[in-house]
Image (tube, rainbow, N blue to C red; front, side, top):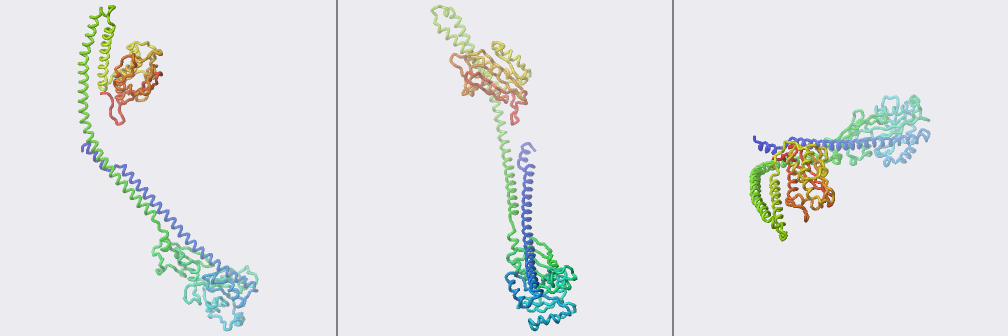
Length: 597
């Protein structure tokens, strides 16, 4: 496979870095989705737990309220000397306002503890109040616990005279209440007054002859009876928590026996697969109720959040867009590489053409300069011959002084033309001079320039931490020569001439400065002085070709450097430039070699 084919193959596929970026982004999207999902799950579970705790709390609070009603009945009996008549109990029950203040309760009544010996007296007393009163059903227990009064009696008439000792759950809870002196509830029973024959229970609170005893034996002998309340669990729950106001459903079991249930399929809000479920045990007055709590459809509706799903969908869409963008970028890169290869090929062809044209132009410059020098030398020679022929005339008193002056001007113009041709030739040859392998000792160069320009040794000085330059010393010396010569040529004599050449080591390149104390250059002319054939010569100042500084600038830029001018009128000038230490230091930012050929 060729190099270009390798480039095209690379450009047409997504790089490993792109795959890593997309993978990390996808992992972040999934992580955010999972985190959001967990947060929603946690908040929803907290709502379910709060609803469960609220339901349990309401059950406890309502049962505590019923217990208070029972103890208020006990207190009333005690205030009547330990017993109450049928009429007194009716009055008390009316003051309780059971239906309004105690929803769910079936009634409130009095139960007496009766022995075999006291049974006849008990019956006589009750029948005096209500003829026909009887205790039922018959049983073999040695104690009787008949219901004496219950209000409202119209819905509880079947319970009047019922002996609670005949059935184990009723009897066990009654005796436990008597012996402990505390409120107790029975295990699951069916109330005789409940035509629906659904699960119910009885709630007891005992009272005694005199002050409540502290010992079990005394409680057993001194117990007179109990205030009790019958409950149908279904009615209790309806009075406790309206189903349509709850977003959970629960069932209740007592010792494994179901006494209440809301999980039927006939419930329109029943959720076959609830979001949450839990079992909670409640210790209530000697019994343990187990609540099977489940969320319903109302809970699901208000706690179903689409935020995590939207995050996931949005993240996946973004991933798709990123992948699409990478694919488009890859294709664009492929097209760009292909276009770059085409342009590069064209540039190479044009470069070859330009190199050939440059060679031809250089050859033309040589030929032109040679051809121009021949007539110029002829003009110079003829002018000198004319001067020699007119030597006697020019020295005579009647000679026209303008003739000699004009001949001198011709020779001056011829000299300037020679300098101009030399400058043009040097400008065209920048970049073709090979690097010198001979080090340039700067002190020797300064001494040579002092001698060449015919100035005093103290007028041109050297400073800095560099002793010698190794790379392309020919062009480096030519730059110094141009800058020093320029400073000397344009010095106005207002101050004794002083030129300082400073070369410092700045890593891979040198930093050189040529400072003079001449007339200076106004900032508006700083760019102009580096242009070809531009000179700032005043009238009467030395002639200049205007090529010297252009040669300096082009040579420095060809070596990958820059030249700057810092000057103001009347304050001298500082020309600063950088110069590479070696050919490798001439490479530009693209890696292309910028050194001389």
